[in-house]
Length: 381
Image: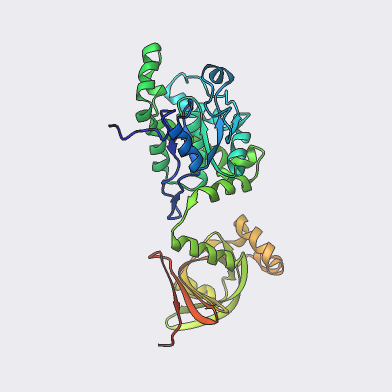
């Protein structure tokens, strides 16, 4: 028996978008989004699986003609929310393998794509999105969603290419009926997906920018991201800590050179997992950081140790300027534009925080390099 078996007996290419590793150390969740080809009439077993999994929102991206030829089997069923958003752009066969990525970009920018993405972001339960073969229009949507979750590129390509295994019989029948078509053009070829992702990044940069192009917001992309990303304990706890830390704090920065240590209050802003600050090239702090990249930050119950990297002049980093001006406008106006001012980022290697749990002092620790989290009561021993 083949290992490539559709999740539903009423289709050939229904698959999970879960179980794909992401750059944050987690993986995409199962039971959130299923990608598929045309759905026939569900069997009793299919219905049990769909309803128990709460996969009750169906997005059909086929053209009017495709739907008329083979209606979606869930369209009239009670308990399902069926949406027909025809994607006519890119629905034909491209003239060559090299033209496939461009065809996929027309799918990504199709007139009805905002409706597809908005529905996926706002659906309360699980979503099945599909076209006819579950390869092109469905493959483009899958890739964009996985890019939003920072999935590994090889995993995105693999998720796309495996459609050829599920569609073997369909592909053979199509080529037999259309001998003039180049097999490589209609096959799920990895060059097609790599080429599409290259064009996508060149045009939009990020998925958040793409959603804004669609007339949606970055919040819609974030809702999809939060639905689909599953994280391990370390990542969940670290994200919780960074959220508690906030966007900016005044902290004590300790630097050293030749066994001489100096400490000074600094204005710190957090951008993603980096802690940014600025200093003057004439100050001891700058000389120490130039000689020894190891530094520590401390405030109240938090201690952060890490490695510092010089990033140039503050005014040349727009992300820093925006964050620093928001948190420390006085310092930004007075110092950020000075000729001798330099920007540094501290990348945490170890974080320790003292907290109280039911009145008992505890130590929460993050070993960033080893990706280890610990939480223990303080015994004084």
